[in-house]
Length: 189
Image (cartoon, rainbow, N blue to C red):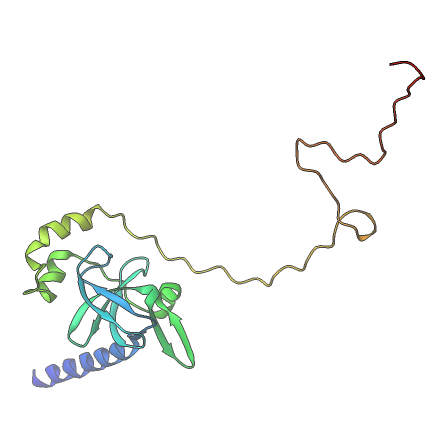
C-alpha cells in the first residue's frame, strides 16, 4: 500500500511539473485580471508587460484564460498573453489549440467559492451569475487562413498602355469633336 501511494505521488508530481512548465505565459502588454471571463466581471488585479503567469486553461474559443500570478487567480483576455520559447512567441488568441492548452469551463459559484471568499464582490454572486448567463458563448476558434503572397499588379487596360477611362454611371462620355457653329445670315435673326 505504501509503495503504491509513493508511486501515485511520484507520477502526479511528474504530471504537475510537466504541465506547469508547459503552461507558463507572459503578458505582452498591461492587462486587467478579472474575476470571470468577461470585461463585466470585477477587477482582481492587473499585469504589467512581461509579467509571467501560470495558465490553467482557456474557455471555449480560447478568448479568455484562467491564470495565476503572485497570489491572485483570475481571467485574462487571451490576446494579451503569449507563450515564448525556442526563439518565438505565440499569442494565445491566435495559437488556440495548437498550444496544447486545456479547455476549461467557468461557473461563478464554484470559481468564486474557491478563489474569492473575503473579496468585496463575493457576496453578490447571484447578480454576477445572472449577468454571466445572459451572454452568448464566445465563437469557436478557427485557424487563421494560410498567408498568400500578394498578387502582382495588373497592367493598365486600353490601347497603348494608357489606362482605360470610363465615366461614372449616369454621366455622358466626353465628346471628342467640337460642336458645329450655327450659321447666321446677314441681317437676320
